[in-house]
Length: 278
Image (tube, rainbow, N blue to C red; front, side, top):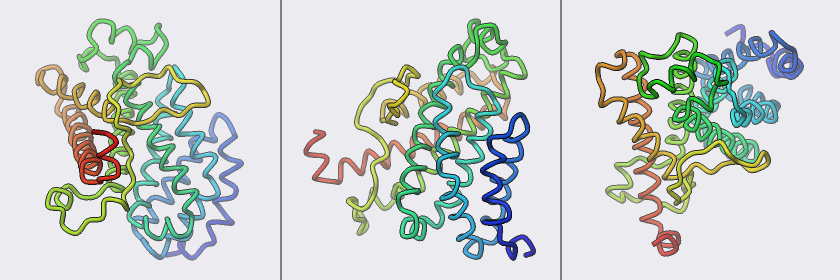
């Protein structure tokens, strides 16, 4: 109650801009501010919504920098953790997407698109671990022996893999919030498919980190099909990973398939698009 009564947009959100650029402790403090906003929004809901929307609007450039920075190689666990916190806040805001859309449409579209790119980068790093860390790292050494053998990874490599899985999971959950429920699509229960955004490109290429610096990758059916197949290959070897790891891979698989089916049905049911695709 005390925190919600404070003018956080002036006392905390604006100073966080300067904190973000302070190294080496700036990112840790920045993470705490984002986590505070996410927690307050979850508990106070509409009473804290304006403050949360202000944070995202003020920090849109920083959020996009955090999410798009994952394109570079190698990627560190600290960078992935910060991206996870940003996506977790955006996912919490998706509960109020109608208000967000009305008040800050441009900001909303920009950070959602950046989150889509972050999911793409996370999948590319996850599936190609030798590209995620320098060749001298323990993760790269273990991946050369057995890419799918999670038990082969060093503790630091396993931590990075866990953070990548969390990023992908949070990102797919966010995008699922902006896709219609599968049950409504399957029954065609009065749903207007034209009002829903298409988050997946109708292409089937594999994810890659070899993109031009100024060109954002496009999340596609091929990208999600690739990560779903990757998860299935790992889950098919029950003795190679611990139960906690299995749960993470299973969650990513479930969310990837859910988004795949939802977006595929949007294409199929929309005559304007289906006629072009098929």
